[in-house]
Image (cartoon, rainbow, N blue to C red; front, side, top):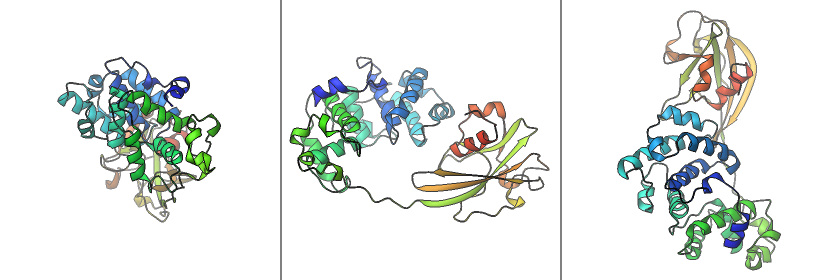
Length: 344
């Protein structure tokens, strides 16, 4: 598998500059970004991020809005907040050197068992058992473990610990992950090109397509809301910043009703300017989160009349040319794009 990896590994930016003193930092950034995000999506973000903050010391001096803006489009913004907290912690407690100890790594915000093991193994070439989704799938198929990955979690971890080498851990960890990423895929697997097929029980028994078993899809809660789009002399848009502790924390959005199960009925009293004339745009957009679906209706007013209502007192007028300088929710960005207020 090691030889296969050396010949077939992808040219990924976080695998470069292994001898650099900041290599572990690069690995740390990649691990934060790759949580629940595909490699192809991460690559351009990683390159821009590293160019802007080439060291953990420089990142620690950034402010949250800067980091969130660079993260915009990657989603799961809590990762960005934890990454900034981690950079500060490492600079304050470990003299700007990413720790190699599993215990110390797991004390950092946003880093769990897998990420800690990956950073130690890949970043420092020290023994650590990093078990991600790709590794789980390779092990389950190789040993013919029927059932879901969750069902076999304990035995997979035991096997992973047993087969993890004492040396060359950096290459081994990336090799088994790479095998799962480009050969032993969930559906489009390519057993003919697999270096492990000779002893793979699933391949021998022709049950590769059955392992691991599919998870039962969880029901997503369906919610609805109305967003209000209003311009001030066609130069500014009324927007508000979401709270720090909620979903989409610290991101800007159009004023809207609460998210509720039944589609809310429009009423002027729920708008930022109850005395203005509001028009139904008939524009509906659906946004899917990991645990819910939100359907958003949009009402627009071309003129503000009177004072902003007390429910939206914390809203602010954002100049059209400054919208691209703040972190805007995907839903709001789609609405603004629909009405030609942003380009992307």
